[in-house]
Image (cartoon, rainbow, N blue to C red):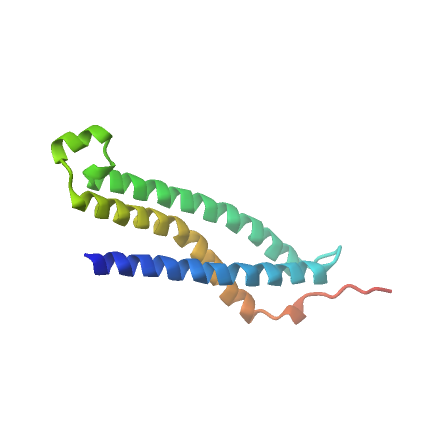
Amino acid sequence: MPTRRRRRATGLATQAAELGLAVPEVVAYRFMRMALAGPNPSQADREEFLRMSTEKVSAFYESWNAIFLAACRATLQSPAFWPAWSSVWLGPSWRRGTKLQRAALDIVASGIAPVHRRAVGNVKRLRKSNLGNARVPRTS
């Protein structure tokens, strides 16, 4: 079992690192696009700006829903999440700590997954697009 927990923790750490690298790249690309668009953005720019805001809201709701469902699942599967008086039936157990750790990793991983999926997808999509397609405003 420790191997599974270690693998799960490693996967979560990998997701967090990928997210930490993807977010600044997406932000830099979008700020550059905003700067190049100027006061009169093109239709493609407006669509990207709209997508930028709507995907954050949907990722937030997906993340909270996934956290809620994972917490409910953990509560139903593990008596360690029941109230403190459940220890009267269970007694002290070393397994309860590992179950709590596993459940906590599952909850955090399910919450980060929608945000990670969107950010990494955005990096892939935005790398393929060409910033040269954005309109450069005239200064004269």
